[in-house]
Length: 304
Image 1 (spheres, rainbow, N blue to C red):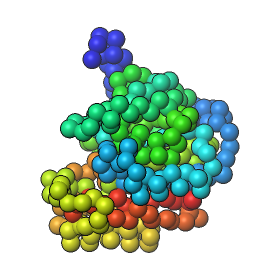
Image 2 (cartoon, helix red, strand yellow):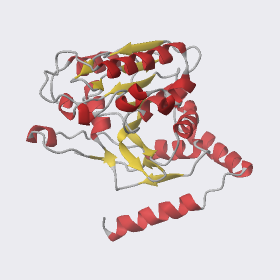
Image 3 (tube, rainbow, N blue to C red):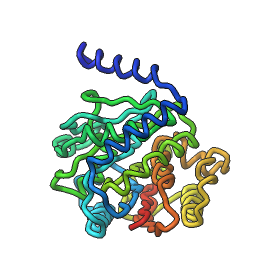
Protein backbone atom coordinates (compact mmCIF):
# COMPACT_ATOMS: atom_id res chain seq x y z
CA UNK A 1 0.00 0.00 0.00
CA UNK A 2 1.56 3.36 -1.01
CA UNK A 3 1.58 6.46 1.22
CA UNK A 4 -1.32 8.10 -0.58
CA UNK A 5 -3.51 5.02 -0.25
CA UNK A 6 -2.47 4.62 3.39
CA UNK A 7 -3.43 8.22 4.10
CA UNK A 8 -6.82 7.74 2.47
CA UNK A 9 -7.47 4.60 4.49
CA UNK A 10 -6.45 6.36 7.72
CA UNK A 11 -8.84 9.21 6.94
CA UNK A 12 -11.56 6.64 6.38
CA UNK A 13 -10.81 4.95 9.68
CA UNK A 14 -10.86 8.28 11.50
CA UNK A 15 -14.25 9.03 9.97
CA UNK A 16 -15.52 5.68 11.22
CA UNK A 17 -14.24 6.41 14.70
CA UNK A 18 -16.05 9.74 14.61
CA UNK A 19 -19.35 8.05 13.85
CA UNK A 20 -22.12 8.65 16.37
CA UNK A 21 -25.19 6.48 16.68
CA UNK A 22 -27.40 9.19 18.15
CA UNK A 23 -30.94 9.71 16.91
CA UNK A 24 -30.07 13.19 15.67
CA UNK A 25 -27.16 11.90 13.57
CA UNK A 26 -29.31 9.09 12.19
CA UNK A 27 -31.88 11.70 11.12
CA UNK A 28 -29.20 13.76 9.38
CA UNK A 29 -27.89 10.68 7.60
CA UNK A 30 -31.36 9.77 6.39
CA UNK A 31 -31.92 13.30 5.11
CA UNK A 32 -28.65 13.16 3.20
CA UNK A 33 -29.60 9.75 1.83
CA UNK A 34 -32.93 11.06 0.58
CA UNK A 35 -31.16 13.84 -1.29
CA UNK A 36 -28.72 11.38 -2.84
CA UNK A 37 -31.53 9.00 -3.79
CA UNK A 38 -33.06 11.73 -5.93
CA UNK A 39 -30.16 11.25 -8.35
CA UNK A 40 -31.51 7.82 -9.26
CA UNK A 41 -34.73 7.43 -11.28
CA UNK A 42 -37.64 5.70 -9.61
CA UNK A 43 -38.37 2.12 -10.63
CA UNK A 44 -40.54 -0.82 -9.77
CA UNK A 45 -38.90 -2.94 -7.07
CA UNK A 46 -35.86 -4.68 -8.49
CA UNK A 47 -35.34 -8.36 -7.66
CA UNK A 48 -32.78 -9.32 -5.03
CA UNK A 49 -30.41 -12.21 -5.73
CA UNK A 50 -28.21 -14.69 -3.94
CA UNK A 51 -25.90 -16.36 -6.45
CA UNK A 52 -23.88 -19.47 -5.67
CA UNK A 53 -20.58 -18.72 -7.37
CA UNK A 54 -18.58 -21.92 -6.80
CA UNK A 55 -15.24 -22.36 -8.54
CA UNK A 56 -13.62 -19.32 -10.19
CA UNK A 57 -13.32 -21.48 -13.33
CA UNK A 58 -17.09 -21.25 -13.76
CA UNK A 59 -16.46 -17.67 -14.87
CA UNK A 60 -14.85 -18.81 -18.14
CA UNK A 61 -16.37 -22.24 -18.76
CA UNK A 62 -19.76 -23.06 -20.22
CA UNK A 63 -21.78 -24.45 -17.32
CA UNK A 64 -25.44 -24.80 -16.49
CA UNK A 65 -24.84 -22.32 -13.66
CA UNK A 66 -23.57 -19.55 -15.91
CA UNK A 67 -26.35 -20.18 -18.40
CA UNK A 68 -28.90 -19.85 -15.60
CA UNK A 69 -27.39 -16.52 -14.53
CA UNK A 70 -27.59 -15.25 -18.11
CA UNK A 71 -31.19 -16.40 -18.44
CA UNK A 72 -32.04 -14.68 -15.17
CA UNK A 73 -30.79 -11.34 -16.47
CA UNK A 74 -33.14 -11.67 -19.43
CA UNK A 75 -36.13 -11.95 -17.09
CA UNK A 76 -35.63 -8.66 -15.25
CA UNK A 77 -35.31 -5.00 -16.16
CA UNK A 78 -31.77 -3.86 -16.84
CA UNK A 79 -30.57 -2.28 -13.60
CA UNK A 80 -29.26 1.26 -13.31
CA UNK A 81 -26.51 -0.06 -11.04
CA UNK A 82 -25.50 -3.18 -9.10
CA UNK A 83 -24.58 -3.43 -5.43
CA UNK A 84 -22.84 -6.71 -4.67
CA UNK A 85 -21.98 -8.32 -1.34
CA UNK A 86 -19.18 -10.78 -2.08
CA UNK A 87 -17.90 -13.51 0.21
CA UNK A 88 -14.38 -12.49 -0.81
CA UNK A 89 -14.20 -9.01 0.69
CA UNK A 90 -13.94 -9.30 4.47
CA UNK A 91 -12.85 -6.23 6.38
CA UNK A 92 -12.62 -4.63 9.80
CA UNK A 93 -15.64 -2.36 9.69
CA UNK A 94 -17.98 -1.92 6.74
CA UNK A 95 -16.71 -0.48 3.46
CA UNK A 96 -18.02 0.37 0.01
CA UNK A 97 -16.01 0.65 -3.19
CA UNK A 98 -16.31 4.28 -4.23
CA UNK A 99 -13.95 4.57 -7.19
CA UNK A 100 -15.11 5.47 -10.69
CA UNK A 101 -13.22 2.61 -12.34
CA UNK A 102 -12.79 -0.40 -10.05
CA UNK A 103 -10.02 -2.81 -11.01
CA UNK A 104 -10.66 -6.49 -11.69
CA UNK A 105 -9.17 -8.46 -8.78
CA UNK A 106 -7.86 -11.98 -9.33
CA UNK A 107 -7.98 -13.11 -5.71
CA UNK A 108 -7.07 -16.77 -6.22
CA UNK A 109 -4.15 -18.96 -7.22
CA UNK A 110 -3.34 -22.15 -9.08
CA UNK A 111 -5.69 -21.62 -12.02
CA UNK A 112 -4.96 -21.37 -15.78
CA UNK A 113 -3.62 -18.09 -17.14
CA UNK A 114 -6.86 -17.62 -19.08
CA UNK A 115 -8.65 -16.93 -15.80
CA UNK A 116 -6.09 -14.33 -14.75
CA UNK A 117 -6.45 -12.67 -18.14
CA UNK A 118 -10.15 -11.94 -17.56
CA UNK A 119 -11.02 -8.29 -17.13
CA UNK A 120 -14.44 -7.00 -16.18
CA UNK A 121 -14.16 -3.25 -16.79
CA UNK A 122 -17.53 -2.19 -15.39
CA UNK A 123 -17.58 1.38 -14.11
CA UNK A 124 -18.06 2.11 -10.46
CA UNK A 125 -20.58 4.52 -8.99
CA UNK A 126 -19.31 6.91 -6.33
CA UNK A 127 -22.84 8.30 -6.04
CA UNK A 128 -24.31 4.88 -5.27
CA UNK A 129 -21.55 4.27 -2.72
CA UNK A 130 -22.28 7.59 -1.03
CA UNK A 131 -26.01 6.87 -1.07
CA UNK A 132 -25.60 3.43 0.50
CA UNK A 133 -23.25 4.92 3.06
CA UNK A 134 -25.87 7.43 4.13
CA UNK A 135 -28.69 4.88 4.16
CA UNK A 136 -26.82 2.76 6.70
CA UNK A 137 -27.26 4.19 10.20
CA UNK A 138 -26.61 1.09 12.31
CA UNK A 139 -22.86 1.19 11.68
CA UNK A 140 -20.19 3.54 10.35
CA UNK A 141 -19.35 2.89 6.71
CA UNK A 142 -16.11 3.83 4.97
CA UNK A 143 -15.64 4.66 1.30
CA UNK A 144 -12.74 2.92 -0.45
CA UNK A 145 -11.55 4.95 -3.42
CA UNK A 146 -8.61 2.86 -4.53
CA UNK A 147 -7.59 -0.15 -2.49
CA UNK A 148 -10.16 -2.78 -3.50
CA UNK A 149 -12.17 -3.23 -6.70
CA UNK A 150 -14.29 -6.10 -8.06
CA UNK A 151 -13.20 -9.47 -6.72
CA UNK A 152 -14.08 -12.78 -8.32
CA UNK A 153 -17.09 -13.25 -6.06
CA UNK A 154 -18.60 -10.36 -7.99
CA UNK A 155 -17.26 -10.48 -11.54
CA UNK A 156 -17.40 -14.27 -11.95
CA UNK A 157 -21.21 -14.18 -11.73
CA UNK A 158 -22.01 -10.69 -13.01
CA UNK A 159 -20.11 -11.23 -16.25
CA UNK A 160 -22.54 -14.03 -17.18
CA UNK A 161 -25.49 -11.72 -16.61
CA UNK A 162 -24.08 -8.55 -18.14
CA UNK A 163 -21.13 -9.49 -20.36
CA UNK A 164 -20.81 -5.98 -21.80
CA UNK A 165 -19.73 -4.63 -18.40
CA UNK A 166 -21.83 -1.52 -19.03
CA UNK A 167 -23.62 -1.33 -15.66
CA UNK A 168 -21.94 0.44 -12.71
CA UNK A 169 -20.98 -1.96 -9.92
CA UNK A 170 -20.29 -1.20 -6.25
CA UNK A 171 -19.16 -3.75 -3.68
CA UNK A 172 -20.16 -3.77 -0.01
CA UNK A 173 -17.75 -5.52 2.33
CA UNK A 174 -18.46 -8.03 5.08
CA UNK A 175 -17.35 -6.84 8.49
CA UNK A 176 -15.83 -10.01 9.94
CA UNK A 177 -16.54 -8.79 13.47
CA UNK A 178 -20.31 -8.39 13.05
CA UNK A 179 -22.83 -10.97 14.21
CA UNK A 180 -25.16 -12.58 11.65
CA UNK A 181 -28.03 -10.55 13.12
CA UNK A 182 -26.04 -7.33 12.69
CA UNK A 183 -25.37 -8.18 9.03
CA UNK A 184 -29.07 -8.85 8.50
CA UNK A 185 -30.08 -5.58 10.19
CA UNK A 186 -27.57 -3.58 8.15
CA UNK A 187 -28.85 -5.08 4.90
CA UNK A 188 -32.42 -4.00 5.70
CA UNK A 189 -31.34 -0.38 5.58
CA UNK A 190 -30.58 -0.70 1.88
CA UNK A 191 -34.18 -1.47 0.92
CA UNK A 192 -34.83 1.94 -0.69
CA UNK A 193 -32.33 1.07 -3.42
CA UNK A 194 -34.65 -1.59 -4.80
CA UNK A 195 -37.00 1.16 -6.00
CA UNK A 196 -34.18 3.10 -7.58
CA UNK A 197 -33.23 0.53 -10.19
CA UNK A 198 -30.40 -0.97 -8.13
CA UNK A 199 -29.91 -4.73 -8.34
CA UNK A 200 -28.61 -6.04 -5.02
CA UNK A 201 -26.69 -9.30 -5.25
CA UNK A 202 -25.24 -11.56 -2.57
CA UNK A 203 -22.52 -13.86 -3.91
CA UNK A 204 -21.37 -16.90 -1.93
CA UNK A 205 -22.44 -20.49 -1.33
CA UNK A 206 -24.81 -22.02 1.19
CA UNK A 207 -22.63 -25.12 1.67
CA UNK A 208 -18.95 -24.29 1.32
CA UNK A 209 -16.38 -26.59 2.92
CA UNK A 210 -13.30 -26.72 0.70
CA UNK A 211 -11.33 -28.89 3.12
CA UNK A 212 -13.76 -31.76 2.62
CA UNK A 213 -14.26 -31.25 -1.12
CA UNK A 214 -13.65 -34.31 -3.32
CA UNK A 215 -11.43 -32.50 -5.81
CA UNK A 216 -11.08 -35.41 -8.21
CA UNK A 217 -14.81 -35.97 -8.63
CA UNK A 218 -16.52 -34.91 -11.86
CA UNK A 219 -18.08 -31.49 -11.25
CA UNK A 220 -20.79 -32.09 -13.83
CA UNK A 221 -22.29 -34.94 -11.79
CA UNK A 222 -24.34 -33.89 -8.76
CA UNK A 223 -22.86 -35.26 -5.55
CA UNK A 224 -23.22 -34.12 -1.96
CA UNK A 225 -22.39 -35.66 1.40
CA UNK A 226 -25.43 -36.44 3.52
CA UNK A 227 -24.77 -33.56 5.92
CA UNK A 228 -24.34 -31.14 3.01
CA UNK A 229 -27.59 -32.21 1.37
CA UNK A 230 -29.44 -32.06 4.68
CA UNK A 231 -28.18 -28.56 5.44
CA UNK A 232 -28.94 -27.29 1.97
CA UNK A 233 -32.46 -28.72 2.19
CA UNK A 234 -33.11 -27.15 5.60
CA UNK A 235 -31.91 -23.79 4.35
CA UNK A 236 -34.18 -24.00 1.30
CA UNK A 237 -37.16 -24.93 3.45
CA UNK A 238 -36.50 -21.98 5.75
CA UNK A 239 -36.17 -19.62 2.78
CA UNK A 240 -39.46 -20.82 1.31
CA UNK A 241 -41.27 -20.55 4.65
CA UNK A 242 -39.76 -17.16 5.49
CA UNK A 243 -38.09 -18.47 8.65
CA UNK A 244 -35.29 -15.94 8.70
CA UNK A 245 -34.54 -16.25 12.46
CA UNK A 246 -33.60 -19.90 11.89
CA UNK A 247 -31.20 -18.91 9.14
CA UNK A 248 -29.69 -16.05 11.14
CA UNK A 249 -29.09 -18.40 14.07
CA UNK A 250 -27.33 -20.96 11.86
CA UNK A 251 -24.60 -21.68 14.41
CA UNK A 252 -27.17 -23.34 16.66
CA UNK A 253 -28.69 -25.58 13.97
CA UNK A 254 -26.59 -28.68 14.53
CA UNK A 255 -23.46 -30.42 13.33
CA UNK A 256 -24.56 -30.49 9.69
CA UNK A 257 -24.62 -26.70 9.58
CA UNK A 258 -21.21 -26.51 11.26
CA UNK A 259 -19.71 -28.84 8.67
CA UNK A 260 -21.43 -27.05 5.80
CA UNK A 261 -20.52 -23.56 7.03
CA UNK A 262 -17.12 -23.91 8.73
CA UNK A 263 -16.56 -20.18 8.19
CA UNK A 264 -19.37 -17.71 7.69
CA UNK A 265 -18.19 -15.53 4.81
CA UNK A 266 -19.81 -17.54 1.99
CA UNK A 267 -23.08 -17.89 3.89
CA UNK A 268 -23.52 -14.30 5.09
CA UNK A 269 -24.34 -12.84 1.64
CA UNK A 270 -27.52 -14.96 1.75
CA UNK A 271 -28.63 -13.04 4.84
CA UNK A 272 -28.19 -9.75 2.98
CA UNK A 273 -30.50 -11.03 0.24
CA UNK A 274 -33.13 -12.33 2.63
CA UNK A 275 -33.11 -9.16 4.73
CA UNK A 276 -34.36 -7.27 1.66
CA UNK A 277 -37.29 -9.59 1.02
CA UNK A 278 -40.72 -7.97 0.86
CA UNK A 279 -44.00 -9.73 1.59
CA UNK A 280 -45.07 -9.64 -2.04
CA UNK A 281 -41.82 -11.12 -3.36
CA UNK A 282 -42.06 -14.51 -4.99
CA UNK A 283 -39.18 -16.90 -4.30
CA UNK A 284 -37.26 -18.76 -7.00
CA UNK A 285 -34.63 -21.33 -6.08
CA UNK A 286 -32.40 -22.38 -8.96
CA UNK A 287 -28.98 -23.94 -9.70
CA UNK A 288 -30.00 -26.35 -6.96
CA UNK A 289 -27.06 -28.72 -7.31
CA UNK A 290 -24.35 -30.13 -5.00
CA UNK A 291 -20.80 -30.27 -6.35
CA UNK A 292 -17.93 -32.52 -5.24
CA UNK A 293 -19.53 -33.41 -1.94
CA UNK A 294 -19.24 -30.29 0.17
CA UNK A 295 -20.34 -27.37 -1.97
CA UNK A 296 -23.78 -26.38 -3.24
CA UNK A 297 -24.54 -23.97 -6.06
CA UNK A 298 -28.05 -23.23 -4.76
CA UNK A 299 -29.13 -19.74 -5.77
CA UNK A 300 -32.13 -17.59 -4.87
CA UNK A 301 -34.07 -14.86 -6.67
CA UNK A 302 -36.63 -12.78 -4.76
CA UNK A 303 -39.24 -10.64 -6.48
CA UNK A 304 -38.42 -11.77 -10.00
